[in-house]
Every structure is written in C-alpha cells, then in structure tokens.
Image (cartoon, rainbow, N blue to C red; front, top):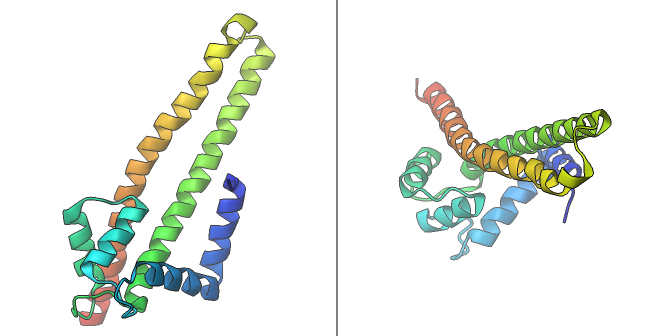
Length: 166
C-alpha cells in the first residue's frame, strides 16, 4: 500500500507534467472504452465515475452532458482531460487535508501522552478513539469531495463554455 506522502507526490507530479497527465487520461479512457473508439459513451463514462466514487445517475447524466461539448453523445480525450485534471486536483487537496488531520491527531496524542492524560488502563480503548474519529472525518470529507468535484467540474465547464459561446 502506498503511503499518503507517496500518493500526494504522484498526484503533484501528474498535475505538473502534461505528458503524465495525458498518459493517465489515456489509460483511464483505454481501460473504460469497451468498443475501442477512443471515446467514452454514457455507459462507459458512468463506469468511470462509479470508479471515482460518484454513483448518482442524475449527477452522472448532468456531468456527461456538460462534458460532451460537441454534443456527439460521447466524451473524447480533450473533453475528458478537463474533468480528469479537475478531479485529480480535488483528490490531491483531499489527500493533503487528510495528511494535515493525521499530523494534528499525532500532535494531540503526543501532547496528551506528555501531560499524562492517557493512563495505561485506558490507553487501549483511547487508541481506538482517534482512529474512529479520523474514519468519520474521512467519510465526511469523501462526501464533501464528491460535492466539490461536481461543483468544480460544472463551474469549470460552464465558465469555459460561456466564454466560447459569448
């Protein structure tokens, strides 16, 4: 399993290097493109989004229509790249937030231990509490991430498309 730092570094490199980003986008399209037409149909796009953790049909349909800029019923490489880059940036921010929470949790645990707030009789049960709290925070962040991803994609797409059609 990759460490959090490794995942953050990989995403930063991908965002910073257009060739790596293009390769990742191509890999996602190639893995999901069942009919090998180098585009994503609605069904193929739905599978990709479900892999990203977005499963709401109406949301997927709205996003599909927003990404399909040429209106041909499929999402091509260029159209999907915009979405993928935004999604990658949001995931990167999510991982950085998670990393910061982990560091704060470690700091709090160290402070409590140094103050003697955790005694040996309660240490086994209190060790589970920070883990459960981080897990609950992760679930809340995942929900926020999904909402932010969708809103960011819509705003990027609508902002860009308004400029082209004006």
